[in-house]
Image (cartoon, rainbow, N blue to C red):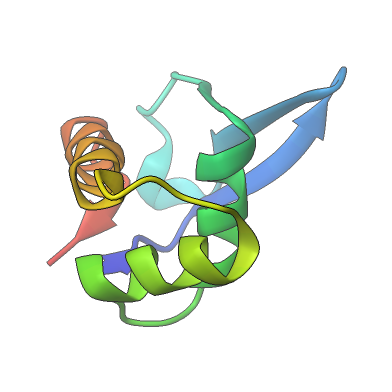
Length: 88
């Protein structure tokens, strides 16, 4: 999967926010606020293909993570899919 073109992570008033830009996203009026962990993943994954396993490995390198991290990654990816931020 891959983060779709036309979305970028910005710091707005101390919040990590995904914002749409470009003509292909002209009807996308949402701002998606990411927590610190999701924002870290976004920055690391932007511009490349990735899998759930890649996400888990990135988080293991950066944080002390619980054994349930795969379920957390699946939840993040599910929410990004729901908001149409990633493509398979």
